[in-house]
Image (cartoon, rainbow, N blue to C red; front, side):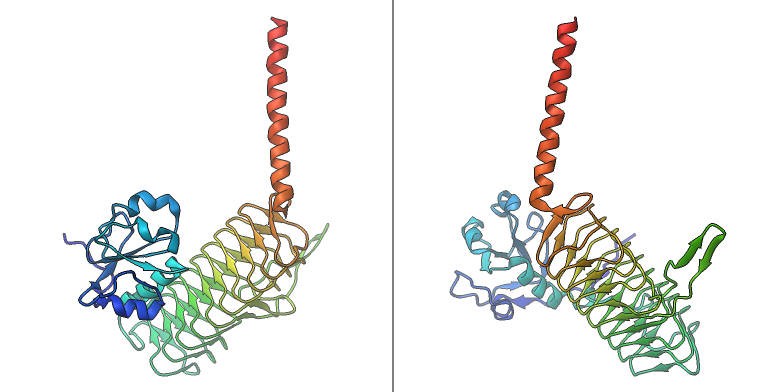
Length: 356
């Protein structure tokens, strides 16, 4: 059985075109006739491949690479073998990503899983739904009454777009995703199994039982947001849940009702954000961070993975630990605990020896 190739073979790009695209500089004056036709990791790259070097941990592999060209930071430009053209860039990985997107454009945005265009047999589009030109709807997808889907968007198999939902242009909605009570901007990517706009976890609790509180808000997802597989974003209880422009959310993230996330935030896998928390622009949350409700994480703050945030975080701060605190304080506490543990172990050993 032959192995499938899931992405079309790219058109070969001349190195001088790559330099023009990325602004990289090459020590080789004449690059006429030099091309790349694919991408590969630095240790597996062949003579037709483009790669990159940004982490010094891979310097040994860089010295042995067979790649046609490699994006490198200026300080690593002399570490490549003679047959590999050094493409010097202050941001090698970003430059590499630009070219990779040019070589493999279909990998940038998920398409319909059946590879067709238009409304497939087996899709259910309500007569009162409005679809612009070039929308793809896969078999088993459901689009409810009054919903609107913008030009070039893709609704994959089994996805559900609820009544009155608005989906912008060039949006990708993955297989088995559900979008309810939501307004979605342009160029948004929602991976398979994303659930948007379901009830928030709202109950008036008491000794006689827990009374369900109606959740009457919406979810607003602004342009260029990407949300990973299996993530859940609850609609607001009494105001909107908002995901700001350009924010990137990993797989298996829970965002509760009334949360407001600013522009260009990065939220890594298994994060949980409790209700009515606010993340300002450019916040970064490492994997498995927990955020308590009704607090604010200031613009540009970074929270280390597995931390628990239970108080407001200042702008630009770097916090970690449980409960989260400034990184310097966290490290100092960890060092102190390590010393105390070592001292206790040494003392226990001495007592045992004396008692023999």
